Length: 384
Image (tube, rainbow, N blue to C red; front, side, top):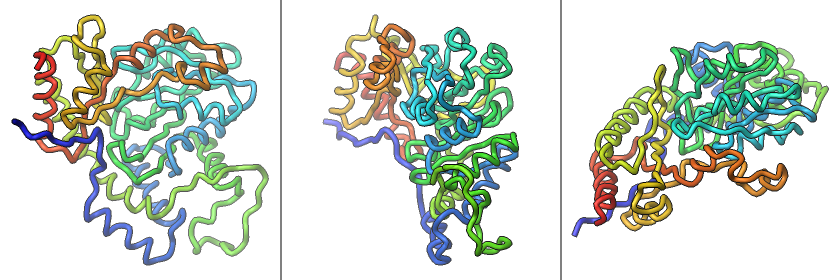
């Protein structure tokens, strides 16, 4: 009888380099936002060829800062695709604005441009384009479908290293927001990054990130660093620590390697599972690069021999951890109740909520692990 493996849905890839990197901030005593954060931000700017990068505590707080820096507030609307992690919509609520949920394309899992355009009103201030699972949204069509007054914020939580039409994710809209959660390709534990080419957004986001302080005191060598700043408005404490940034610098240098490995294994999955007709493989980019934060399939309920949840249970019994792709925000209690939403209001997102299946894909899996996942799926497809 074959040995049952234990394969996690995701694991961060960390080693001695990261372990050694944290020694410097620990020994220096500069643990909060300081020189390592500045170095990490500079490295991120250079990689993306973007004017500004501001490290944050998470992608959620980066999204909140982005919207706040754009001036989004009570009475405003921000369009959000319904098939995304709830934090995307929550950031709008934090601003006192109304999240307006639109549908997604069930083939790409990303924002449906026509559905989004139909939701634009005179109150619309921004659209959050989510690059879900590392595949960039259709940014060209989205941009041309919107009035010039509507800003595009990229939720690039899953998309570090992705690109669209030769432009890195996070540099296509007015603002980009990244996540360094352990389920992402690179991690700092928790953590995020805000990117923009607009000086006004960067300046305001930097103030709001640090309690509303009128001037940053990130290093002890700044002029008059001993004097406290003034506070002309209420801000937030969304600052990354130097310990996290030290890890992030090492991880960022590995990003290309990580994505190359993930893409190679995504191709393996695609080819090895191609003949399971009821298990649809994820879309590949027409123009650009996929970051492969997750490998999200679709269990076709019309022809599959068992439901998505039953398949997840079978894989769990074989030691394989899986997840639904993510959830449909309009089907979650708070949003369902507050906005009187029904599942069929966004049929594409509802379909994705019920039938998507993420299978393990990360940089700590061996070739044998990937082969085991394929073998188990093929056995289930044969009815074994």
